[in-house]
Length: 270
Length: 310
Image (cartoon, rainbow over all chains, first blue to last red):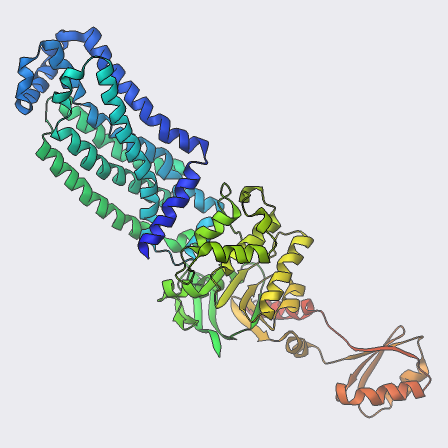
């Protein structure tokens, strides 16, 4: 029964998502902008920064960590080492896609229904709170994930197009796959759970958006930690991180259910 | 058999009592009108009975389920029309209804059920139109179908005609009437006294506490004696004097060409009364029971309660 309920919520949310121009643009354009921006920065850094960037203490430290993780990099010329270093940041950069989409989509999901009055009617059906919240979170997280994976594909095509294909072996590693297929789903679900929870508690979408911003900071921190050489995310570290966020997903669902006040919603929103 | 039964049901919001010590029974197949001024606790009562909010004290059993404990099972067997029924305006009427219907385990094929009800309310031709393009009246009818689509045992209707134009209100009323005729148990909250009288078997008047619960006729009798109205062709003093002498006439009053009488036994004494009037030369146009508007009963009840409070 729960599966059917969640499926119903998913299909309805998608029907709404893709009939709203703003939401549809958010889901499609945000990934493109993030990928475009990422590639542009890398291209600018490699084209104009060049090997001289590697002499800075920050990049020296990062390069050392990269060499420890992927020893074959030492065979490459300096400029290509820089390129490999930068391209390896990109999978973390992709984590911004689900969080950005969550800010724009999930935060409206419950607030909109409160305002339209459809939520009270929905709560009068036998739907369970956790089904409603999980359904809404997945309805945003799944397209966001698909877009993230498509963006990763686009990124690889651009890498080939720019003539950096020889380096793909240093980029598309086990860590790359673990980040894309374990860490990203965990982050996406967490972002959307926070967005939906915020939406259920907030009086408007802006209030809910503030809550989701919390998730962006750790994602930026991940990129910062790796690019500055403080920490290199090896496959085992990514696995541990994905597991920890997976547990956080489960906790966030339970917390969301506890924080969802059916009575307040029914009494205060009419 | 009581399908709704409440036992000292109360709900407080902070220090404010919205509903206090409500005890009532509603029989299966009954249409119960729930009247009361704004803030009387009508919506709060409906929400408690439909398992949307919990009582502070007391409890209610609806279709055999405790409304504060068996919420999911209760939601399977009751339908609720909220005061401000919201829809997904960018989705079609059919899609909207199918979505809500799909949460009920009793519905095998939501699309079949939705089609049946959309045809019933005459909206099948517009089933693929977006709800955002519908008028307020159409949305209300659609909301009624949403509450009905799983064929609930009890239907809670909160102000179903509020804010509708007369034509749309009449359409909704007609639908409720039909449902009542078909034997649905309906709990109808309304401000419209004519509507309540037209549609309901019994009427409950609430003002935080239950002030009265009875048939419209019995409520009238509580405040007004049964009176007979005899419409004469022209005013006739002789007729009045003759009638006054009759042993079963307790009171007679002349209002233009109309006689207002209180009889010992309105039904039994009526033929004799008419005979005497005719014999006294009175030309009778009509004889009917004087109907005091339910509004007067309601106002008396509510004012009595307000007087008690102060």
